[in-house]
Length: 116
Length: 114
Image (cartoon, rainbow over all chains, first blue to last red; front, side, top):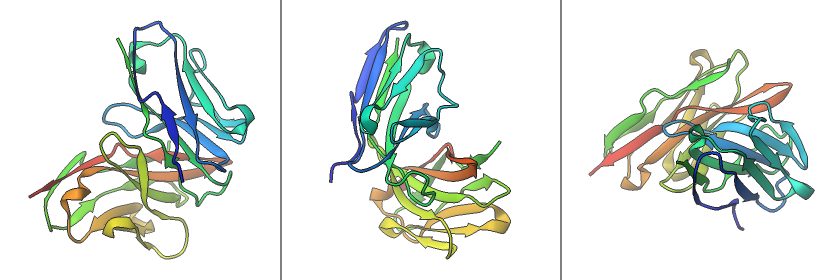
């Protein structure tokens, strides 16, 4: 079974440029998460989807970040414009059942973003 | 605010020695607890989890963890370290308040010495 697939794996952009990350969750997983992981830190939730609905986007900096999950499958996270402080690893994860507190998340390999 | 504390950002053990990685959480309501492992250039993968029931939880690769409510702890152990255990380990607490959120610790990088 394929895991969570993210692309690109690495991205280097100049500040003020836009960037987008793509995630394909595990087939059948209805919950999708985007996390940001800064160097030396644990992942921090940016947004959580249950099917197509963003049920928790309280930590998403909405002035420059946006996300979408069309048809409740793939998702795209966008930053426009990027700032130096956005350099981090962006992780996508998915889990099987919305609202099942006992189910763990399955993570992709992440996209390492460097803003110069 | 809810938090997860992992004592020791770096831990070194000799091959064959006991591994002990510490995790404490702050929550008035016992959360669901997870340990994830992250190998270089890979995503996080689940080692084990505590949801309900038995407080001693066994996971993959010989790891186990014990939930101690009185100490608000969920320390990860392995009796005998192997070189392949070298990785970064993250403790996470799933806290619920209307909805739920996973709070991760800052991670502990385990180094195994030959």
